[in-house]
Length: 157
Image 1 (tube, helix red, strand yellow):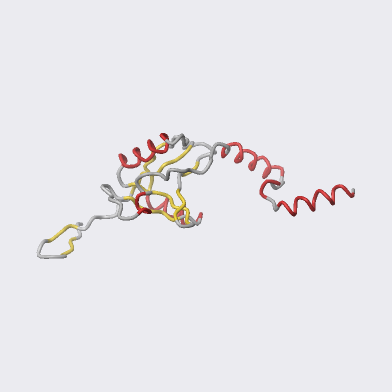
Image 2 (cartoon, helix red, strand yellow):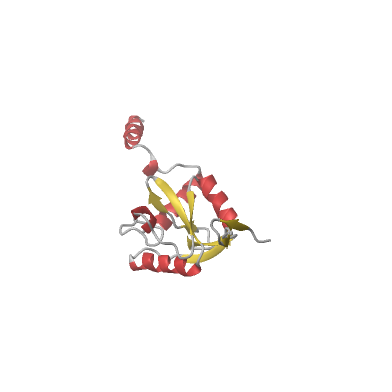
């Protein structure tokens, strides 16, 4: 059933929200699978592209910046929005033909000039998984002051 809205003397069909969107995934289908996100004003934002060409172009721009090359995957929009909500991320829909109106909007069609260093993300994920299997916590994420105190205590033994 089509929905129609009257905004002027012309009748214009409403644009339905797409059920499936294109997202950028790293190592899709593996245990190390990750989703591309950007930081906007202290928020972690996952981009949901309506048009596959826009998603492919964004992935190409990341590659041009020596960023790991993501794959473009077509996924259910509702599932991605639930994932983002549960992870504390914001899902931001990028419609086909999107034209930016602000500097923040420009980041929805082109990645920032500076990217976070992700060269060690696979090794860090492997180390975290190994530590979790052994029931240990990584000292890299502990407070340095606490770590120094732990070393002093160990020195007493």
